[in-house]
Image 1 (tube, rainbow, N blue to C red):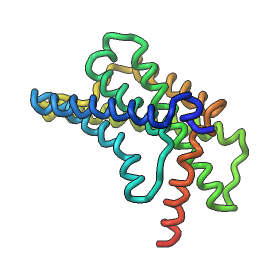
Image 2 (image 1 turned 135 degrees about the vertical axis):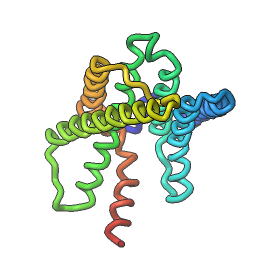
Image 3 (image 1 turned 90 degrees about the vertical axis):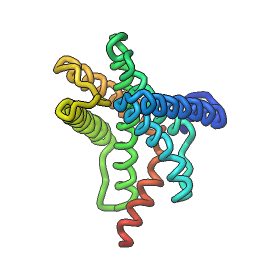
Image 4 (image 1 turned 120 degrees about the vertical axis):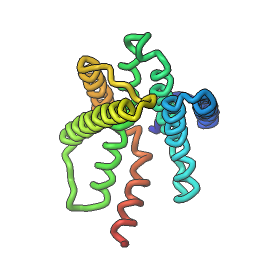
Length: 213
């Protein structure tokens, strides 16, 4: 079952939702540039670029990503961009939802990478129970890397005297982020890893291209 099947929406409907959200990101990027809110412009611009990656992969490699996965990627980055505009401060649970959704996506990517390596090489064989542990560790490692990046960008922006696209809210916020990163990882490890099988052919294609070099 694909993520599109699980969401219960048509592929066309999911693509329309993606387009609406991309227009929103484009509008925020332009508004940030026009009003010299460079943090907003950078946040929205990078997020818009991420949502265009599936189209780039289709054009360059002929890989068509499941529309549900494209929607998940888009929702994850939009939640972050919108949160930076105020909801992170105004709504106590907004950050928790955002990190859970992002963690589900990262967990799915980690699962797909592991499965692609297994299918690519007979020397790699991972027991099902260990896959769940790998997904959890992969997400937590990505979470730590994100927190370090967030802190680095915030400090660099402060030194340069410009608005930061990322804000660090303190140790308590970091701990909360990691807790809900774990929640997202467990959701995929226990129930949802199969929804990300669509990523596996792409990773295997990349592995084959590496072997051929």
